[in-house]
Length: 122
Image (tube, rainbow, N blue to C red; front, top):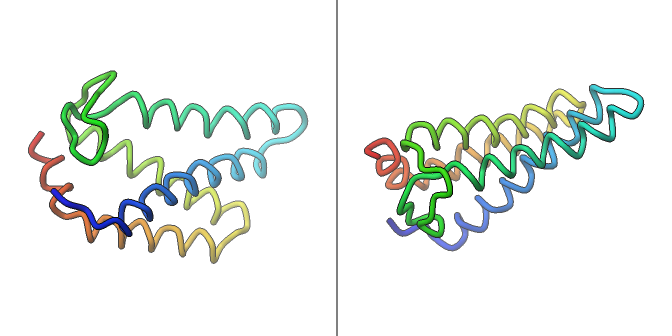
């Protein structure tokens, strides 16, 4: 299950963009001191979920799974976080950026069909 170096790099950058997008959305849609709490907490919670719930022996990760989950659960988690970040950018007023991030997510997954098939079999 070999992903090209460029797709692994893109995937990493999309993960960072998703966390940023979630933080931007939390900042944009909250007020007062909640703005600070949510803008920091939402990306942190997403990052913890991303790192904690994994498929055992996933070759696109370290192979370790602090909390092993089926591939469908992991895929759903990835899609919610990644597209959630894109949606966060879009709804916070960064429309073009949100659309570009969403398209890049789709492109990354299109070039990861072997990984998608593997996840769905787990």
